[in-house]
Length: 231
Image (cartoon, rainbow, N blue to C red):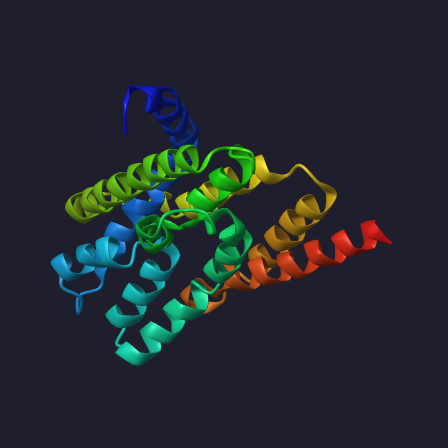
């Protein structure tokens, strides 16, 4: 990267900050989950943030292993929760056709909810391949670094954080921050409203599956609204 990239890098960091604020309590919650999962070594749990880099799946898998669940079941749950990333990949695939091979190999590793949301809402199809790479790598490395910092904070502060602190609010807060910028069309609004309602109703499901159910139903509702608008 050179000096010409600095304005775009600064813009990417500014775009990421609001979502980082929502990710802070989510990361701390992940750290707390690692500490509370007695059968999961703290270092191994922290390492999952580097190797997996998928908050919702990490929390579900760590909680499951901590409560005595099998490794196979934990992996299955993680794959189900992360299935949404296939939709992200399909949506962004056209932007990768002219990118260099190294970027096509590395970039998907950082394709988390926040990265997809920012690329989808802040970067249009007219930007150059280089600008897309600069923006993508900036927000991806920013989230990757800070997520691991937040998880580390949760691990070290876990024993002293009062149970009355509502750190669990970090999960919906983060997803609200992701969804709101994308509510530019009626189908998107329908998907968000229906998904939020179903997710809240199904919040009692184990392993955070309510979020997954709400997301899937929201996608179906948004697709139906989009087709209805075209008729």
